[in-house]
Image (cartoon, rainbow, N blue to C red; front, side):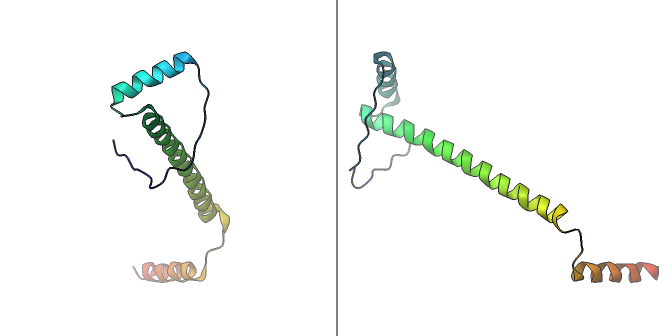
Length: 97
């Protein structure tokens, strides 16, 4: 459980929750070993937020990769000059066999 302490904590959020939710959160905090309720909430929410961001970035990257792949395969059906030259060289070498 890696904890990073920011140099200055100058931001604050407020949340409202039910008594039963708070009891569950506090029990989890005690079981987790976090020293304070606040540090527990910040750690758990941060872990989940980082997971959501990583998953979303992975989806975006895979969508970008998919577009590049399909563009490469289906985007330009005309071979470039290097490919034409390579095909001609191959044909001339195999014709001799």
